[in-house]
Length: 295
Image 1 (tube, rainbow, N blue to C red):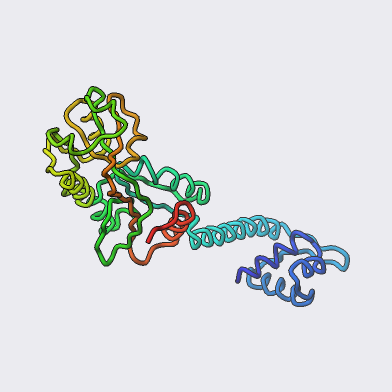
Image 2: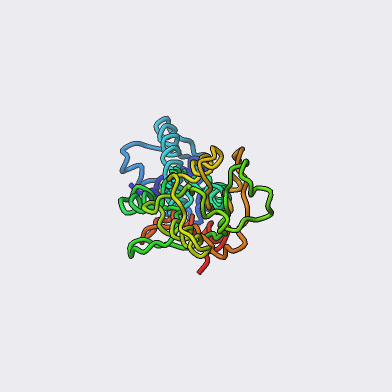
């Protein structure tokens, strides 16, 4: 028995007329009758009572009709799900992101993806850049938003966001009344820094900026999460140089100031493995449409 036999049978059962069923199926009526006869022979029971004027389902035919409809509905659903999966519109994606990315590029991208691919389940994990790279190698995440550079042959990366650096000061700091702060004025202050082992590019950018101002920053405290860094600034444990989007993290007791000498831009990159799945490819399309990749 083939699926076409069930489709032919269902059409006749719905129409109770071989001529109309044949027209519905876009085939001739005699071959349709032959297919139904072959199906009855294979099943070992009669599906229809036929006269010259009427066609009626037998009791067995009625039961077979109801079950055949369920089968075809399941087949149609399987086809639909398969097509959705092949287009990246169904499935699950595990996405990592550095904490600061939650204050800039990640929310609008996730919103755009959820709007276009509601059937894809997203599982999000806040992780450092190194943690994301490790999990991506192990297949434990599908994509990640990290601080570049990423220099691994098996991992693709593209810049999706750039922003300048700013200084975060305790509200009680004497320089908060200035429109901007020159870094050299902070040379004697303790700095709250992100560990270099976790995000070397960001750490190096901050240290390089200080060196250009004529000093090496005094490491007062280290913290892995940007939110923790800002909280330590609010606690007057020191000052910090942070990405400008951290202004979106509303923390009482902290004032953000521009750095006029800051020509340094820091970036967020999207990473993914070679040979991406359909769902990953779909996510990449949404990112390109949302903010565009930079080369």
